Length: 140
Image 1 (cartoon, rainbow, N blue to C red):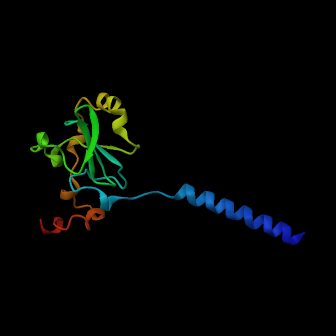
Image 2: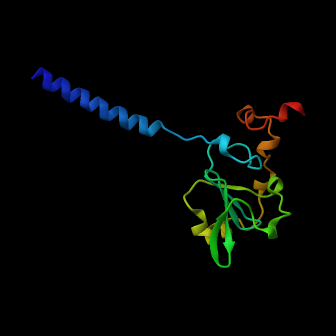
Image 3: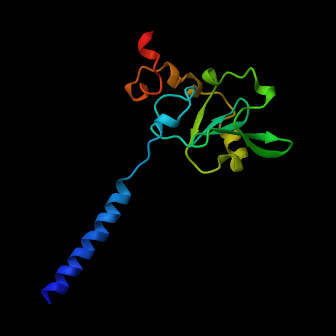
């Protein structure tokens, strides 16, 4: 009987430990974020670029934008945006899967300019979290 109770207690503790560790876990992807991304985020899935109605997916480093009525993903923005300045544009962090499928919602939400574009880029940050990504900041 004691062995049965002990086995039951051990299995209960194991389930409680798995549940607790699942609740505590979080993701950080600072090292994957592009240097033009805004500072202040430990984890970013997508950036929405409302000025050109495009998205950037951080894990794969791909841009999503409309091309002939379809969403495409490419490593670079199309030629029509060759003069677009990612460092000084509005960049909205969206941590939801495939936000481009709800593009009308995001376009409506971020139609009017706000303070989002005032954020400093990772490239220009002196925050120690970005030191490994931005080797030049200590030389300025």
